[in-house]
Amino acid sequence: MSTAEGASGRTYRRRPQHGRLFWTVADCWNVVRRGLTHYRRQPVSILWQLGFPILSVLLYGYVFGKAIQVPGGGDYKAFLMPGMFVMTVAMGFVSTATIFVNDSKKGVIDRFRSMPMAPSAVVAGRGATDLVVSCAELGIMMATAYGMGWRPEFGSGPLFGLGLGFVKAVVLLLSLRFALIWVGVWLGLLLPGPEQVGGLFAIVFPLTMISSIYVSPQQMPHWLGQAALWNPLSSTAGATRALFGAPTGQGTSWPEQHALLLAGAWPAALTLVFLPLAVRRFRRLSR
Image (cartoon, rainbow, N blue to C red; front, side, top):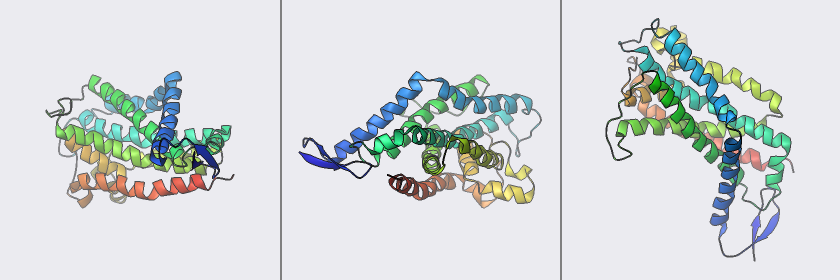
């Protein structure tokens, strides 16, 4: 019999047929399966997460669609939709934090840590679950946008007939979501209770507003526009607009001209910072 260290630091015996890597992947899959089962039994959770973005699409698209002009010309709905996809993946970190806080409050995290499972499986499993859910959320959002008249440049390519630009745009959106998952995990392990989770909206709301999600930074006051230009959400929004073939409303500033580069660099930087913080915080939980 071989031994394995549980998430709480205890040592357990395991069958020797498989190595450490196998058990780490198996433990991670069990956490993913638990998370997906939760969504399957309570689909209203996903609908609740999508409620605000879908409502925002309808309000901004139909109420302000004729009033807001896109710099350089173009239809505002076509400009808005990629930004709304960015807002959807950005707001997902609040859901991640909420789940971790609730699991901690109910003792689920302590239960995981007392079991013979890899210490990284809880954090990695949550990240994989949220990434799968994000794919479903983006699919629903794109279907909603398509019903409103949004028509991206699908092109033609080897992946289900989709062009490389469309695939790159989806990859950039999921890369941002992947990076923000670790922000949500870290905050979820840091917050003392569910009551504090609502305060995260005080962070995400200005973060989405002071960006190019809704309007171009050129239409903001200069000082506010400069902050919006360097917002990671603006880089992903600008890059995906170009890849989807939508009006970009971009100016001549360096962040706007290099939106694709920044859209890849920002998620990588956020992951490098917050993934180790999340893992370290999980390992430092009181026993």
